[in-house]
Length: 273
Image (cartoon, rainbow, N blue to C red; front, side):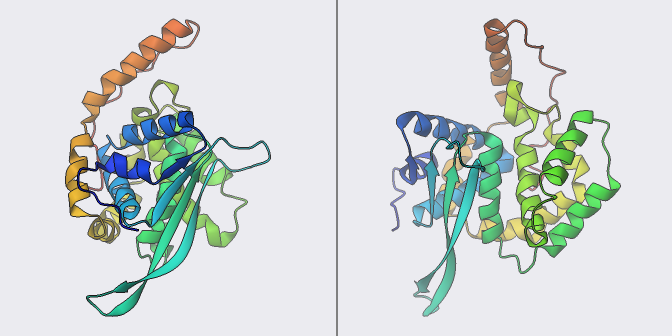
């Protein structure tokens, strides 16, 4: 099914392809998607999401996690095919059903990264594994919180995965780390690091992704969607006042909460651009 994009915004296309357990889940999910679409670093990701939704190849399922479920989200890949009239042959393609059981930026971005991996036409993830392994080996950070996040998200939570799945998890968790930065997570951030510190720590990984991988992703994005979504993108310094507002409201709701730390620096919004 191809949904018409005339008079449909990227956010409307995503919502049309989202099934939520109730209206509250839908509202929360779309609010989080709208927030994430503001960041230039996630624009390619959400442009591709919208393109695949438009083609009927990606859908979201949003509901609250059941007590017996261990995961907070997953990305189901379904192998399919379509007929290419230009080349007069059948072309293999992947379809995706992304389930979100807890609406938060890091979980949404993590699952979308698995989709990115599928659309990136990797013949092998080994080159990526070599770059991220090198970064983990040779780099350190003065930020204790960043070191704790990397140890927890990239090491401890991955060590029990089968060897064949670890590289895929590293790929998704790199983007998860970006989504967990203060610029995105705001006052409620679990960790106290910013995007620039992530980019500096994983500089070899960033350079790898900024090359052929993102060129491949860009080639799959609908031009009209990429054009329309430009209006969503905001400089970090324009998004920052919303964190201040969040801080202000949170402090008044609970005066015992610690105050926000030092101001987040204005940085390059998209290291892949």
